[in-house]
Image 1 (cartoon, rainbow, N blue to C red):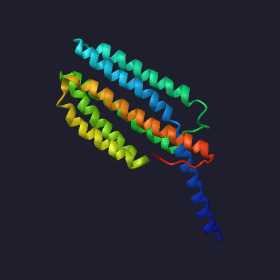
Image 2: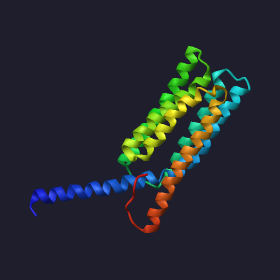
Image 3: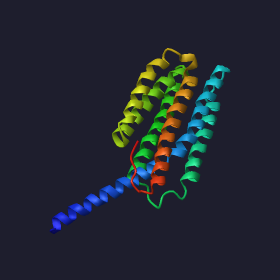
Image 4: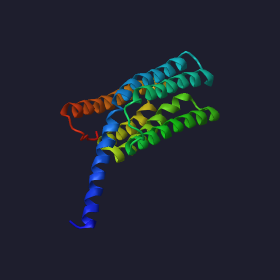
Amino acid sequence: MNRDEANQALELIRRVVSQARDDSALQNWGTLWMLQAFTNALGFACTQWQWSQGQRAPGPYVLLWSIVLGFNALSIVVLKRGQSAGARSFIERQIWAIWTTFIAGMVLVALINWRLGLAPMFMPAVACVLFATAFSMMGALMGRVWFAVAGFFAGMSLVMTAIPDQAFGALAALWFLVQFGGGLALHRARLRRLASGTREAKLV
């Protein structure tokens, strides 16, 4: 084996090891996703309840979602502590980028919604479009199954326009099913990998 062939073989090994580490790191998010399925669904459900009670000022909604997002951030710090040995993997960096962008987009849409004086029930339809965009990016990164989830949310964006008075409640149920289901799939993949005693991991 000459030097060029040796370098090519080494690069291939590095890619395989990196992919296994990325996939394993992603599977470690399963528990977090299942936990946050409850908190996020509760946030949407409470938003629906506040609106149905006649709450129109933005303050209570800001407080509600500050608590939800703050809890989510704290849960990441607590549950991820000790799982990674140093720097984030490539997959983790991409997941952080996708969902941080999504959250920023949702906050901006809420602000635009308020500034234009639109009915807040406009937001669930836009949220579904943003969800579809985020899951489409995950599909390109993690596996084709996420494209199906993206398509599902794209379709639900139109359904939301037909049930404006119950849209946040419907979004709570949809998001819980998708996030908890995705988290459960990742968690089960991690358990299978650990039970097999191998470092190899497969993306969902």
